[in-house]
Length: 129
Image (cartoon, rainbow, N blue to C red):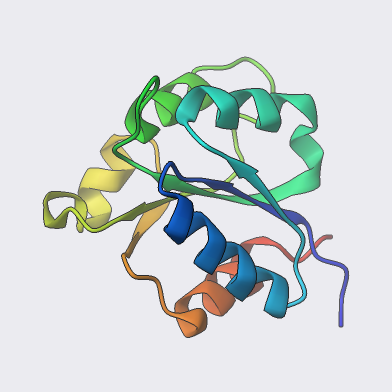
């Protein structure tokens, strides 16, 4: 198996964090957790080259996923400015790739996210060069 970059999971719901972390770990990929957008930005900026993918909940306290994505995309350094961000949401108002692109994200995954969809995202974004 090729070396894979880590996944940063930014999610405020404890159950969702637990389930997604277990699925990602089962796929053999290291995952770091952040509980809101502000924590996610700090984690990403702390080691930007380590992450191949950010899975970002949209509706969180303190800093939303939308605001976090804007903050990341507005930064000067690449990475983290260019790290792929996938919105993870049950909100059908955001189940649109064009809308996600306008928000600075690379797409969306509907909650609950299936293991197969996570594997597809990890295969696409986390394989290290």
